[in-house]
Length: 354
Ligand SMILES: [Zn+2]
Image (cartoon, rainbow, N blue to C red; front, top):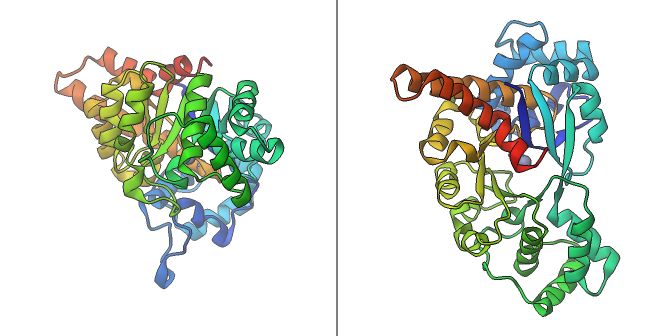
């Protein structure tokens, strides 16, 4: 089946030779102590297993040999081979990180389509700097004109998901906007709530970072279950809320997708970073979530390898889990095929009206 990568961050220009590659195998900002390599991690193993053959090397080629082959081929050829292996037809790209290549480069290298996802906090900072005064109405106006298929919140990084679920008053928003403008950073919980409510009003799917990520976040405050009061409050509005990443709270995310009609869950980053063990969290997502609520993604950022591993791990492990169900007579083969297509692409096409 072709895939819709419903959450990724796009490519960086590189080059990713020598020590420049390994940092993209981790959410940590630090090198490992004692000269250890991030290649010796679940994602490192996945890169050697999946990507080495794409460069004409034996699977599991040593990191040094892999990086040498990479340098020999050049960044453009590596990118074409990696993206070409994925079967991804549509990329939904969070454009909120500075320095990533324009979407046109991703589409040129892949032959696929790409759509922007606007990061709420990034847009808010622009509006704050430009508008001064009435941030509440200025932000809604800016949001109404964005050309995107969805928006994304990084409130989990800036504060935590234990936010007051109520819509803040215009007076509260204006006071918080003044503080944020002076700090040049959108981290005030009142403002973060306002952005989420403005996004709900706008009606485009709202992606929310949950679970693990880099060390800016405090993990237990990124548990998606903390959003429960907000999900209750927004249920009537019906704007889709897409829980991203989720690990190790992917079972909580699966429950929320099960319980709330407007909640969806993304299984991306978890699969890349658990690598050989990806079948376990994937099976746990599938324990409870309705299959029409789960969405494939890679969360790829930086080198193109993360697209290749994300797609390969998804295909391999979903296939294994569903084949096990078919073998036990729990699921018809035709249903397994249908479920794969739903999670791989059709759920996302419907949700984002692609
Ligand atoms: Zn991400």
